[in-house]
Image (cartoon, rainbow, N blue to C red; front, side, top):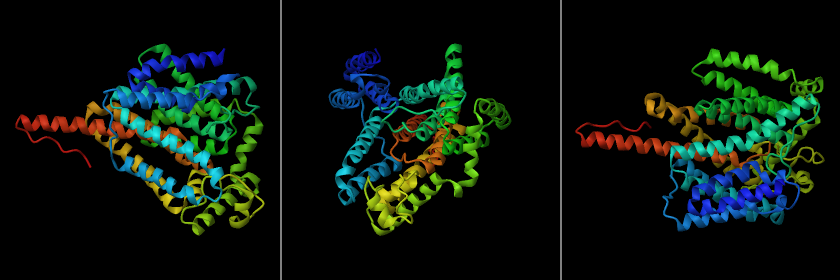
Length: 429
């Protein structure tokens, strides 16, 4: 039944995609983030829904007359350079044949990121994108939170198998990133029932993140909470709400969860933590030796035998930063960090400009929510191999498009003021 439902939704969307490629963007984001086909039991689990929707979207993009142009900015230029650098590094991969499948997957994500940038043009479409992102992840938060309550926190929460967020640590980070987006959407919503559902999803997502037993997720949600209090216009109210909610959520967690979180302070005695440090050292030595890094598949015994302090402790990177460093060298890491910095500065520009112009309050609130989400990703990502997780790239799209909308609005107002004999206000730097 689930397989049939997913097929009906996807195939039923094709006429709407062919009518307007923006509909295809939303379907693509839904499929790539939520992976609804993984909730089936039969043929749908292996059907190429993403390729079907991507093909229909690109075809519609080419034949329809809707405006389509990438809003070029320092962010989008660096994103393009980062993708180009991964094309350059591929031939120098230590394990070329094994690297090609993941390289192909990453290229598809970047291609569709630029399709999103080219097609999403209005505030309504930006908010629609955030609804799709938040609810796609919120589905697993709602489901995982109920599972944590029903099991008394005795079992770990896992994400959909075979996806970026299938691992318990990855689903924890994804749910943490979803919480600020869900809260932003809650502030936009006037319908009481929907507000209650969003609030329940936020609380259940936080509980599911704890129920994943992810120590990195616990650190990320703590960092995100502190950032929310620091940046909020109502620090006392937000801080008080978090202080009240935290003990209530922790009440559902058993002693074994507390014991696992206690190992954060004793990382030198934890084999998993030591394995990560060994993988990080391997990535640094590999990048120091090879300008182009080692390619997408470097976490193998043969590579660790050459570059790792402990060649017998073979682990994945468990860090977005060391992952990019080991796979694409210092240039790749530099581009990745620069992309993050420029994305953050774009959000900061939106927040600052919105504080000076009341008509942009929605944009300021949205950018603050995305910044908070990115804090969770940057902190939690320090302990996870999720450098190519697509959600941050779609959040980047929302920020870039929103800034362009604001700049165009300010330009139009300035032009109207000049036409009326005024001087107009310059766009903030």
